[in-house]
Length: 257
Ligand code: SAM
Image (tube, rainbow, N blue to C red; front, side, top):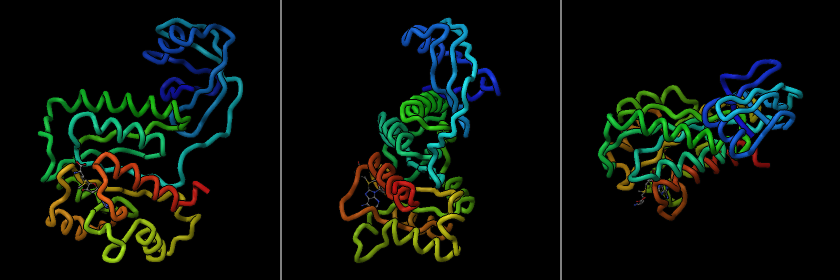
């Protein structure tokens, strides 16, 4: 299964770069072999190899498939930059589950030192992880990896979403706070959305760093329009919270049955 966004026409598809290498060298594909390919958006097809080398694999589209594995709701995980390679886990698992995009951001209690110089390299690596995870989970599109946002940029972006949820462990106790289900139900009622109308919803799920959010940050997010939500009574690790929140949201969208 490959995702070839740039080289997909009505009748032909090309695999280049690492995809070509993987197909020709690792999978040993040759003329006549078939594979499934997506254009990175809505089209998926069966393609038949006409020529294969480790630099370029050319194939004819022989059948367009109608498989659409994309979720009903577009959920962007806004993740405060975590330590080490935790962001990779968030991207890999979030992509499998069905995240629409990942928006890393900076916050007060972040443990890592943000280094703008390293950003391009990291974004490149994260995009590669997203593509591999999208291919392995048979997604139609590869989630976007957005540039690292400052806290202010994150706050300003909230109004662009139909619903922004701010994961705050102080809301974790159902007796005092609100969970994802309640937040989603209230939002649907507020916007008088039926399940069908909500099918193109753009949602933002904001997750704090290892040190959590400050009270000031929670208050700012709330006044910027986000809804504070809990993910249950237990404190989840920063890399777990987004994956859990995303799963709950897609479940609430009805797409999991
Ligand atoms: N110290 C642990 C770590 O190193 O990962 C836990 C960090 S927890 C404070 C990180 C973030 O996950 C929080 O800022 C919040 O966004 C989210 N989170 C974790 N558990 C949560 C819960 N029960 N309810 C809501 N959000 C939660």
